[in-house]
Amino acid sequence: MTKPKPKGDKKKIERALREREKNRYVLRLYVAGLTPRSVMAIASVKKTCEEHLHGRYKLEITNLRDEPTLAKGEQIIAAPTLIKKLPLPLRRLIGDMADTKKLLVGLDLRDKS
Image 1 (spheres, rainbow, N blue to C red):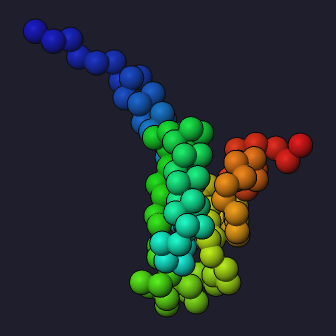
Image 2: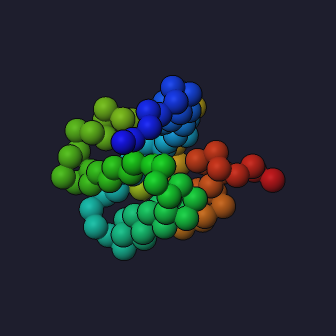
């Protein structure tokens, strides 16, 4: 026979799930084709996310050559552009994604110092 779980456990689990969702990052990376610069940006962002946000992020990659109308809707003026949708505040990083320090500051994972 199994013992019933205390009700306090359920509340702890629910609190932990809410906290996890609050700390979840939603990112969108816009690239222009599969140029060497785009491939480097994709690899750099994925690597940084895996190292610093493992299991706490969702990364959507959009090729603006395939979906050019999205550029206007998201007001993308240059590629690559990374948009941090969540957690707020919304942030945009444009250009070189190889600079890990700049990427971490833009994602609010490290202070500017």
